[in-house]
Structures are given as structure tokens and as C-alpha cells.
Image (cartoon, rainbow, N blue to C red; front, side, top):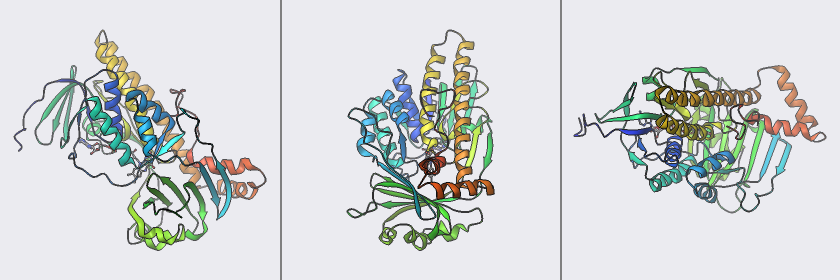
Length: 412
Ligand SMILES: Cc1cc2nc3c(=O)[nH]c(=O)nc-3n(C[C@H](O)[C@H](O)[C@H](O)COP(=O)(O)OP(=O)(O)OC[C@H]3O[C@@H](n4cnc5c(N)ncnc54)[C@H](O)[C@@H]3O)c2cc1C
């Protein structure tokens, strides 16, 4: 037991659990609401977070983050990559290509693309500048809400107390499980393999996003190539009955990668990861006492199409900060509960919307009906003459573009 065991830190208005991108963004949003913020993170301060993971920081997120920490959007944009060209192929034949104009001076771009670890580095620096107090090596194992607040117990015996807790402790959220909130949803069949490749310099693959339906060199599997600052990601969508050893093991990657990118890239692999899709939303985003607010992957998991995971987590964090401040300033307990319940209603509606949108995209990518397969094939044949068919093939893998009904000013 550490010397800190049994020590209770002074009570604070709000604690954030988890220093992933969403917890860091929520901490910034809370600081922007004028609240002192303490953040508890299980990992040590010198942790190394792997891989590219969530690459896209979308326009709405840049706006949200910049509102919480002015200048942050500019740093993410400077350190990210904005590629301008998208191409879509069907069985090796191009069916869509579009090059977008660069943003006008002073205008936020549609997105910036950088490795999640880089986004986190900039968020962490912004948190330090904003005075967020971070306790590293603080793994929360106990959560005890009561009518006046929440007690958090760490694995090493330390204790904290706060009026409200914003839980951003990721997909396996101990906070969510401890307060007894379950997932609702399902797991999709099959898996994806993500390979990060370092930028090999001049003569490299052009900085374009390229999506292949039914790549002929890979037995008709879908493949996406997405550039980011410093390299690019190759995302291979495997079939439900594929053997992970054949595609997802690092030793297997050099066997298939040269069939979809220049063979020299097989020498520059940085990271390989396999992931399965979960499409789940917490049955409630707040606990029964209305003291704990779940955000990011602690609250929902979506298939990655449309890059809704991290981006919607930023919107959750901003909404949680507004709700916590309103609850702290409420004239009576009923108004405080109502502020927290508003957060639950609005962000759970958004989560279900995002889940359905990502699910729609997943169904398009893995058509199970002969009708949809035929529609896609017919669209690919007609695309050179009727551009809207190519546009449909390009856009459908991201799901609908509209915003949740609760959030008409933003996308998530
Ligand atoms: C292979 C892969 C590819 C992905 N690709 C994409 C993509 O292309 N697009 C996209 O949008 N998203 C993608 N994602 C998802 C994206 O990475 C997540 O949406 C994002 O990390 C969620 O952020 P978060 O802050 O909610 O959770 P996390 O990043 O999981 O952060 C949770 C934090 O909480 C800490 N923690 C956990 N338990 C405790 C505890 N008990 N006490 C204290 N701290 C705790 C963890 O150490 C961690 O720092 C991908 C994920 C993976 C794994």
C-alpha cells in the first residue's frame, strides 16, 4: 500500500476521470466555464500511446476546441494535414474523384488529419496552460455517488470528493460499470486491420484519401488509404470468416500490403492493430443520483465510419461542462438535477443518432442483401456517365451528413 493510501484530497467542484482526448477536451471546456478542474488518469505521466487511431479532427470539433482554448484549433491545423483530393474505386476502376479548394484565409478547414497521440499532445499542453491539475497513476476503482456529490477511490488508496464527476475513462469505463450503467447495442461481425506507414519522403503516395470497394488484389476486400501528418493509414476490412493470423499479425502484413501500396512501404510500417466494431450506447449517460456524467467512449462506441468516436466525444465534453456549471449554479437541487438530465437527454439522442449513422455506413460497407450488392455494382458501372452514382459510392461509407436533431448547429 502506498503512503497515499487512505488520504482524502480536499473536495473540489468537479473531477474528470481519464486523460484520453475526450477527458482532456472536457477538462478544457470546464476551465472555459470558469471551474477549477482536477483530472485523474490511471496511466503514468510518461506513458506512450500507440498508433494513429482517430485521425480526423473535424471542423465542428476544431470550433468546439477553440472555444474552450483559443488558439488550439490553429495548432492542430498547423500540425495536421489537410488533403484535398478524394478518390473512390470499385473493383480497381475509379468511380469518383474530387479535389476540394483550400479553405479561404481565416476560414477553418473541413478537418485536419493527425495521429491521435499528436492531438492528445496538443490537448495536454492546452490543459497545462489552462491550469488543469492532473494526477497520473490514479486508477479509479470505486465510485460512490450520494445526494451531495461523489467519492472516488483510486487503486492505491487515495480518495477524492467532488460535487460532479465527468467520466471519460474509455470503452471499458470502470466508472460506468461501478455506477451500474449497461451498454445497449450490438457487436458487428468481422474485423478491420489498421496499418500506420511512415511518410517515405519524395515520390511517396500522393496525399489523397483513396477508398477501394472490392479491391481486386485482395480478394474483393475493401481497403482505405488515409494520409495524416507524417505518414498514412491503410485500413483493410476483413470478412467475418477471415483468419486474423492471415491479415492482422504484424508478420502477415508484408504479405498483403505490397498488393495495395508501393512495396517499399512494407519497410516503413509503424503500427499494426486489429479492431472489431461495437455499436453500443450507454443506457443512461448519467447515474441515478445525477452526479456522474459519461462522455466519449465511456458513453458510446461506434464503428469508425464518419469518424464520429472522438469527434462526438468532444461535443459530449463541451455539453457536460455547460451542464456541470449550470448544476453548480442552480438555485435548488431540482434545477441542478434538471441540468444534468438535459445533458443526458441531448447527448444520448446524439449518441443514438451517431450510432445509427455509423451503422448505416457499416451496412453499406458490408452489404448483406443481394439487392444492395447489385445497386453498388450498377452505380459503379453507371458512375462515368451519371456522376451522382459515383458521389453515392463516395459518400455512403460515411453515413448521413445531417446533424442529430438535438444539435442543428453542429454535426455530432
Ligand atoms: C485501432 C483503433 C482505431 C481507431 N480509429 C478511429 C478512427 O479512425 N476514427 C475515430 O473517430 N476513432 C477511432 N478510434 C477510436 C478513438 O481512438 C476513440 O474514439 C478515442 O480514443 C476515445 O477517446 P476517449 O477519451 O473517450 O477514451 P480513451 O482514448 O480510451 O481514453 C480513456 C482514458 O482513460 C484512462 N482510464 C481508463 N480507465 C481508467 C480508470 N479506471 N481510472 C482513471 N483513468 C482511466 C485511460 O488510461 C485513458 O487515458 C480508434 C480506436 C482504435 C483502438
